[in-house]
Length: 393
Image (cartoon, rainbow, N blue to C red):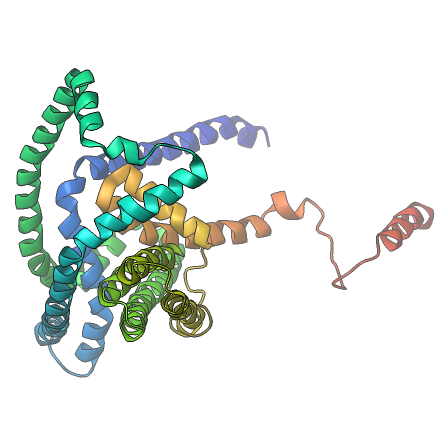
């Protein structure tokens, strides 16, 4: 017993040092992700696309096709879907953007003559006065120094944006190449990572990896289908009720619907403004029809699309999803937003595992486990049994 007691402090120090080592590794990895964020974007997108296409490639491979042929078919199908989507959407969206540009004077007049006066009446603020040319000129003269500094900042941003644009073009060119390589070598990459797992923890890590893969795969594939379905519902519905910019607004609302409630909220606001400007007044019928379109879309999403296609695969509350996306974007920019949901899904699997281990630990059950026979036990019965135990002993 004394030997074990003497070894305990050393074991605790060794455990602390191992935990500290892993914390340093995690911190260094996060720092590198933040530092290399701009160039990591095509790699993250390529890895996600390769991971999403890998199950289909594996299925074709099990049917007798070679890996290269299976990957070529899956990659070709992915490229074909993207090309068809661009061929269908780009002309339609181009016409919608032309309509928006042609309607720009109407939106300007509506803002100056309707929206701002209404806000002034409700808030008591002089909003239209700030748009007066003489007042703006006088304000610029008064704050010339700050304006010069702001202009320098803007021009600096514009000069940097040219480099950023070239980087985006390079990322777009690299994306299909990286996707193909990730898709072709995905199984090999997984095997190499699995070979590095300590043998004592291989079973646990395999189980957690499989659960994370199932949860994340079902969620992302299902959410992608829901986004497309909602975009079609909103775009077709708004176009049928007579909204000129219905297709553009529907695509925008469907595209950002992966963030809970943001897609529908944004779509409703844009559609209401477009309806008010288009009717040059308060067209009750058009406004009601717009509301009906988004109500039907939300009901279909809540009761048909999400339960049947996505289900409760990710197990995260909508507020947790919103927080994960906002936190990822704040910490690591666009790459952080891409990684937010995968990291949140994996973290949720790990938390469930930690909860399971906690429920089995002595910290939860105590030194003397209590066996409960019924789902409900009357507290008075427990007190009576406890009072009788000393007498029986």
